[in-house]
Each structure stands twice: as C-alpha cells, then as structure tokens.
Picture 1 (cartoon, rainbow, N blue to C red):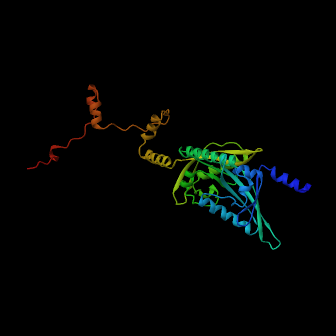
Picture 2: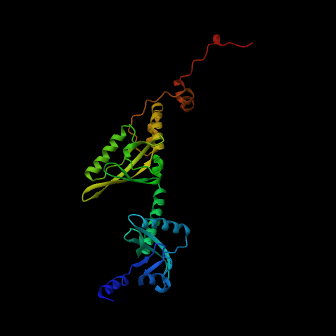
Picture 3: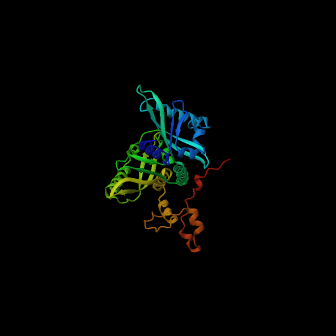
Amino acid sequence: MDTTDTMYRDLVECQQDLIVQFNPEGRLLFVNSAYCEAVGKSKEVLAGSVFMPVTSERYADVIATQMTRLFRPPFACTVEQWIQTPRGMRCFSWAAKSVLNKSNTVESIVATGHDITRIKSEQKAIKKKDEELLLAIESGNQMYFTHTPDHTMMFVSPRLRALLGCRPKEGKRTWTDYLTHNPINAAGLERTLKAISSGRREPPYRLELSSWDGRILQLEVNEIPLLKNGKTVSIAGCVTDITEKVQVEEGLAEAEVFIPDLAVSKKRIAGQPVYSVSPPKKKPGFFRALFSRKPDEEEDLDFPDLPKESEITHKK
C-alpha cells in the first residue's frame, strides 16, 4: 500500500463521523470504524447488509422520499435517522452524495453521518419550555406581540390571533391594517412612532381595531422598544381587551346626563374627593317633609290643596 492509500485510510478511519458507501440498491460496500462502533457490529457482518434499516414504516417512507434526490440533480440529499446502538437510540444526520460514471448513471453513494442526539434532545427540551411558557402567557389577561419598526407583525400570541381573526397561513401583515377611523388611533400611532424614534418607552394607550369578521375591539396597549446598537429594531408589548370595559364607561357617561347625582356617587364609591358642585337640591316631597319635620315646624308645611266640597262628586 503506497503512502497516498495509507493517508486516505487514516483520514477515513480516524474520523469521529460515520462514513459509508453503498450501491444503488442500498447494500453497504464500505463502512469505517466509527460506523462499526456506533452500531456495534463488525465490518464483516455489515458488508452487503442494507444501509439505514428502520423499523417505523412512516419514518422509512420519509427517508425513501428524501433519498430519491440521489438519482436526479443535484444527486445529493440530507436525512436524519434514529437507530438503535449499544448506547441506546441515537440520531444521526446523514449527508449523502452520488458517485456517477461517465454516462451520468449512479454507481454508488457516499454518505457521512454526524451524531446529533444531544442537539435533538436540547431542541426537544427547548420546545417543551416554549410550550410551557406559551401556556403561562395564554393563561393571563394580556396578549403579546412584536412588530418591526415598519409595523409588520412578527410574533402574535395565539389568543391575539384568534381575537383579530388572523386566518391560518396568512402572510405577515401590519397591525395598522386593523385600525378603524376612530380618532384615538391617531394618538396611539403617534406614541408608537415616538417610541421607535426615541428608543424610550411610552405610556400605555388605547386603540380601536376591527377584526377580520367585522367586530369592533377596544384594546389597551403597553409596549417597549427593543434596541440594538442604540437603534430600535422591534417593538414588543402586550394588549388587553377592554371592549366590555369601554362599553360600561360609555353607558355610565350616558347615564350621568340623566342622573346628575351619579357622577358624585361614583367618586364617593371610588374613594375620591368630591370637588364637583352638587346639583341644586330639589324641594322635598310632601310625605318626606311630613315624616321628617320637627314638632314646631307644622305650620310651615305646604299641604296640598284639597278639593272644594262643591267639586266632589258623590256616587249614588
């Protein structure tokens, strides 16, 4: 064996990644030591065996579909495979490339496999934490969002998507698409633009939006700019649905027109000082005056005028 062969053999055998070569029918032609160690079998046993045997029929169909790319341009593919090893189930990411003859026919396929079990476990753990966090977020009154400085929505929590009526697989939209013509929206938009330009948090504000199905929504918005190198890259915040609260406020405002004492009562209930001038007191009714008078006030009572005797009609 010459020096070049020795160099290539050492290069292949000393790799920690798995290296295999198999024919178009999927039979192994070559495996390196790392592959033998991973599956717990010798080269003699593996020679001629089927590459990447899997027990799950659904999983096998996915791999087979991906590997059809090896027989058409670009004659390459990447697949992931869970296999049983002496260390338990391990996940390998395979990058395969076809070896073509002079007539562009696939003679064999060379593949390298990298153990990504730790990465997959971490991804699973992160996904679980994300689901738990999302569950906690969705359990509160607030609904969360992020949008770019040009108002394109990036993240919208599921409850907020449902409230706005965002349709499945709908492309990214700007949150301004949902604004109504209510004048309060101009003030809200101004605060957002100010936060984007200054990079400082603005006080909460209210917006009136129209959902996809035409419902009018009143939302209270609390947001903060996210900065990178001193420049606003996105806006993150939360909204609370106050539609019913606004309806109650409007109802009370209308009621105050007809019940002047209501505004004063509202302040007393809320524990606020009453500075407003009370409406003029109405003259007490006759019966109220009668039962609340003092003994020496009898002559001051205004009794109602009794009908004259001539005005009384007696029934026979």
